[in-house]
Amino acid sequence: MSKVTGAKLVAEYFNKKGVDFIFTLSGGHISPIHNEIKDSDIYILDTRHEQAAVFGAEAYGRLSRKPGIALVTAGPGFSNALSGIANAHMSQTPLVLISGGVATTKRDRLDLQDMPQLPVIAPLVKGSWVCYHTDRIPEYLDKAFRCAVAGAPGPVYLEIPIDILNNEIDPPESTPDTNVSQGCADISGAMHLLDLIKVAKRPAIIAGSGAWYSDASNELRSFVETSNIPVFTIGMARGLISDDHPLCFESALAIRPGAAGYALTNADLVIILGARVNLYFMFGYLFKKEAKIVQIDIDPGETGRNRSVDLALAGDIKAYLKALGERADNLPDKGRFQPWIDELRHIDTDAKKAYQDRWESKDIPIHPLRLCKEVADYIGPDDILIADGGDTQVWMGLTVRLLHGGRYMESGLFGCLSVGLPFANAAKAMYPDKKVLLITGDGSIGFNFMEFQTAIRHRLPVVVIVSNDHGWGMIRHSQKLKFGAPISSVTELGMVNYHLLVRDLGGHGELVEHPDEIRPALEGAFASGLPSLINVVTDPDIISPGSEALAMV
Image (cartoon, rainbow, N blue to C red; front, side, top):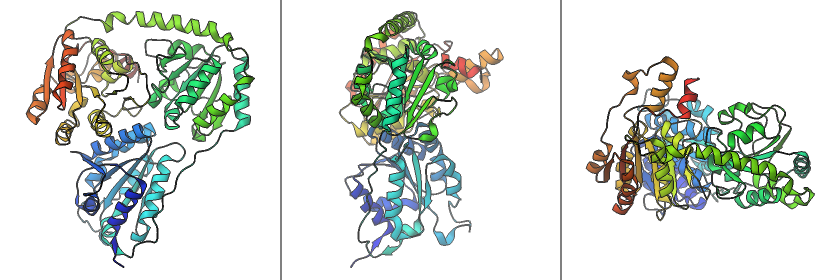
């Protein structure tokens, strides 16, 4: 019987698991794996920086609900991946980072790219392992994939030293492939929640990323309609129930023009489905003191964080919503919430009217909200929109409306700039028939700018809009509010002609200085069939709510 290498075992596991994408950058300590998968059906999206590879894997994990796979080399390849892992950790995205490592016989001998990788990354992942035995590679891979999706999803780390990849052994009898079954609903807990709904007068639902990963769109919509409770979405749950739905009041962010701030500060019952009580909810202080709080989460450790809850239920969101729906006949007449809903609609309408002049602004330089409104109006309901940057991400979050889940991504709570282009490339590779549009800031686009070359090599015609305010806008504005004036030596970038740089790389580039030019530029960029950048000059003096919040830190 012919021998197999450790790298061959990795490739065989990928094949059995049905892995279709890997995000990577070449390196000596992982070349044996690349050699085994180079002729496979796996789409190998090779990036220009390991950080971008991990961001790409994160986008895959968010959109597919399956673990994204990032493959990086040892030492600096590993350390370059850390920001991406930290972002995936904060956003609870299923991801498997596989890193090469120095040979076990050469560790702690000052070999090339030697460093203690496991203790560095352990605090940022759900699980972390080094495989020291070639015959156990399939076992460790199966453990990593299982851990990434079991319970609350998140990134995991597996290190395989180069000699373990190169070793030859007899083929194992079988390759493990363990499926994960999430927890069921506690029926008594579901009944308790129904009892709380019976006595509530102003209830509100917040659906977060846990509802998205649970694939609970139908169950959420059914329960909302049956109970007649207004719902707000956040994170990857944006669009899980359409913003056009009469009971959906769009984003749960209190700073967004709409009803969220009023609803969450006035609700007497807040039902939190797979969302964490964090900064976005002022660590729980946003909810009024007397409100009853119910939190359902796959991770019992998340219930009660920052704010004591009246009912904590651990389990799968979809299972709980299904159980609630099956027992909804225990609820009284749902029309009793209609005055509350009418009140929220009135608040929502008035709040949006107050923003209308900014969304329709004809000012030059262009108001960033006008830019975001043009983007939101252009993008189709089934297209994918990505927001990156500081102020730019805030402005887009205040504007975008979503009709389907899995169509909008931001960096998330970690606030890691430069996720945008790697996210966009990954999304376009996954869904070649969809339009993929990224809106980002002129600071953020600089971090991973060479991923345009990745897009060009892989023929991924993503379209990128840069809101160019000539600097680090969020920092500049927060410094002005906090210190009386910005620190120009660290916040001013000047005008960078990113559109010309993209042209030189072989893409499509265009400069926009008037708001009426935005839509024609978008149409031209998508019609070009090339990776494109539209460089939009925006007003550097407009201060976002995000900048105001940062000034209070």
